[in-house]
Length: 352
Image: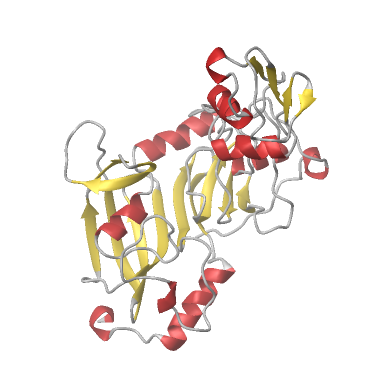
């Protein structure tokens, strides 16, 4: 697989401060009047009621404490301040947050030309905000900062250049597009499932087989809106999901798996593996009883992320032909694997 390519000259934006994209932040200062039903209520409650569909409750509360909210022209940092009907609340949206160059959240570039780039996304960095105007640090804000605001948009104004998603906690290879026709071509390849995706996952447990397919439909978890769950139901709202996995390295109590999702559903790999009793190490959401980081060797670093890595991506470059890329393991994942190799000998029944 092709690992790197000469990078094109840096954009003039590389050396300047945070850039506010018209795709990411409204030009005017958002403001609203306190409605009658919020007379005498807390400021944070009123702000969430007004702007909660565009920004998270946590982010809005943080902006109040940071002094980004005005009441009748005066900045107010107290979430508990009691507002009155008819008062004018203004939201001073801060500039988009950009990963500091060279920091742990700064994306690497595996390949770049005038049409697209293949990135090595670090764990902890979101692909994009939750809505237009969301200024949280993400691959999207990094793209706008580095390449400018004139990037193709397909699935929402908060996703300039974003062709497909990786979870915030997932590291590894992803592709972004700079031109509309290239963007649409790549999205068509994902829709046709012709793009080859390979993930490596460290899981708890002992796989029953050397390899297998998981075919379980997924649906939103009614108790947790941001999660999904496996189901046998065929009802509306469920979606088909198909995942292939095989053992790369077996350990006592753990296994390193190669995973190839044939569909691209939200949290698919994490939910499917947890459903068959192989939850991922470090996953804060989809876990199982009797498994935990206490099972790791004593000299092993404690993971602060889900140990799921987008290792390989192969696709047809719309202008250059077939390309394949690999992303090396992040240092923490490599350290944990080395510790398991030293202290948890392979299970010969699985490795045979």
